[in-house]
Length: 112
Length: 109
Image (cartoon, rainbow over all chains, first blue to last red; front, side, top):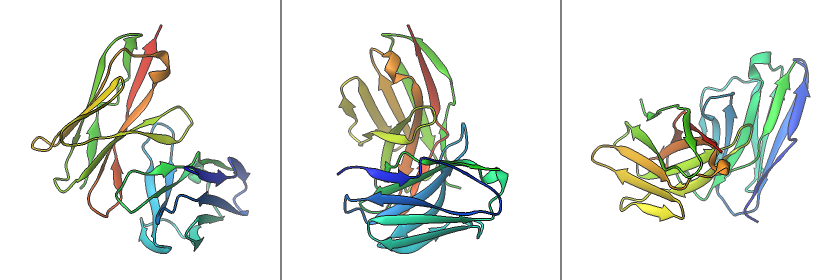
């Protein structure tokens, strides 16, 4: 299995909703990442988990809360988002940090 | 500031043409280099890693010049399916990857 699986593929949520994005990989990768990508921009790093511990938080607002339940799973909990948070949210994994990533297909989030 | 700079394009080329993209990076500690391809509204996909000696994968050739901190990607015999945005990416040791803003390629019939 050489894939990173993200669910859901599309999500529309109101500003008062709580939702979660899920990411799963079974490649034995020990580094997992959340990225945010707006149209015509490169991916922006949000969080890095290395060996299931949060190693990097790029000053992301607290309305985004990551969780790594085990070495194969990565969640992103969303609460009280703003319309400007609408974007493609990408999960990625790599054997170790700094190596080439495998990206999931992303969750396209719209906040209304 | 660690940056990767690319010409955003778009590069408009006919089928069968050869096209080259360039990228410069500012972090001299960069140790790993990649080209990713991203189709519209899709996730980035690893196209190829870039090695110091240069490397080739079919119609794609990547070159690295560490002294000039410059990376290139050459695509020969362009296909319509090559139309995409090409992201230049660097990594330094155990830190995360740094993405360029991408170069858009449009191949026309």
